Image (cartoon, rainbow, N blue to C red; front, side, top):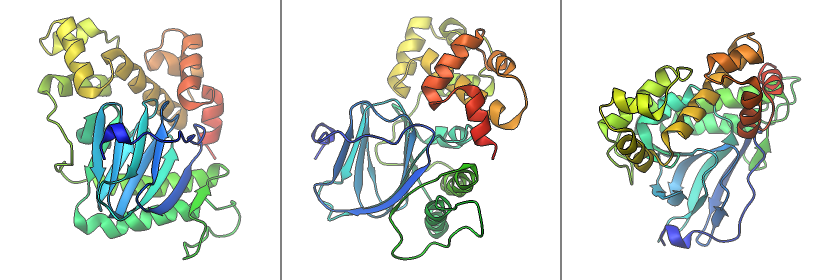
Length: 298
């Protein structure tokens, strides 16, 4: 089976802003197709068997010990890998915390796909972290959070700020453990041009700066047209779209960690118009900035 064979019946993704987690053990014939992508990030952790994930023009296999992350907004699909008897994996739909993308960037394959091969000595703890994501998502906010137990429903939705924060903390541990070591070769990983990596570093270091295609191209000694072509070809997104995503992540981090007004957050993140900022933030996160801040502060 190849990427062209993945599409089947389209499956809806959870609405943006929710934390939804599950553990599946699927056999041959299982496949999900989302022609419009998802409004949230999708993280998968494979524990047995083999899966195949495709997003945009990028395709990657998922084997035990692989964390594969799909960014929102790009058509994707996934299925049990060719010739595999099954695919056992954890999955979570959520809005990632902004700093996670810094950990994932060295593992980017393009088109918003990140493939991480965790070292074997971290597997058990990552498994335990995903089990806590599932259990903590069920917490009602009173009493002790539930203990993971065999026979639990394989899917849970975090309701309430406390359950969502606990679940994200456990998920953050899994992402950190998987990405903590030096990047290791993952199936389908390409070699990123040093000039593209440098441009990504410039954007990540100061997303609020007045970057343009011309200014970034000058910093990496390329013509604007050559830079835009190279950047888009290797990352799957145009430079200005990547910049907007970085600015939105920066704005979300400021909303989570400061008391700056939405107007000052917009300005500090490189959005000169508060009205434009409110519109694109709502498109990206599903809620306006003020609502996002309230939800992220239990």
